[in-house]
Amino acid sequence: MKLNLFKRSMIFATFFGSCLCIALIVASLGTTHWVDARARWLSSNPSKPPTNYDRTREGRINFGLFEGHKELHLGYGSRHSDLSVKAGTHPARRWSWCGAAAQLAVALAASGAACVLAALGSAARNRCSPKPLLICNCATILFTMGTMSVWLTEFFLRLQHNVMSDEDLSNHWSSDSTAELGISFWLVVTACITAFVNNVCILIAMADARDADTIAPALEEKVNGAIMLY
Image (cartoon, rainbow, N blue to C red; front, side):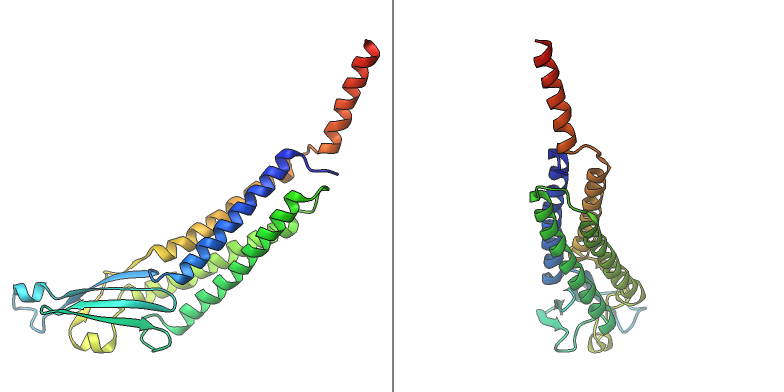
């Protein structure tokens, strides 16, 4: 049975959705804003009111799954340093960034497969089973949700309380309750929503019972009837 134009359009729309998923996942892996935090310097004598010099001692930290950047203003200048998994200075624990990166890799592969299947399915002359396309999009949803779960667990258990190194903590720096989820994390959320919308489009196409070879005979019968009447 041949696909009608509506079904082809809905399936082809998921091609663009899958391309968007790929772009979002790659962007989340390549950017360094999974967590953004502010650092503040705590006086060794809390009872003493802070001076203007103390108020200038602040900083910013941002990092992704593999690397990041830290900038601390010491009052007389700034100290910049890089955070990386390779150097062992990444604030997140190994299981969190490993788990998030591995699941994003699987989600990326699933989105790539969905992209290929959508292109082939919309170009095919005969109707193909939409199940492989549904499975690929479901895999994208599943593994992006797994990524979010892993990172949110690490964020609420550890990162929202501290992203500073032991050396910074000994120098009275703190980031407690200043950390927030950055744009890189929300890109993964958007990819998950996009994959869900893809599945909605596929289900709508499946629910449409019309096909090109069922519409054509009906039209042909009307034409033949009109000719005979004439």
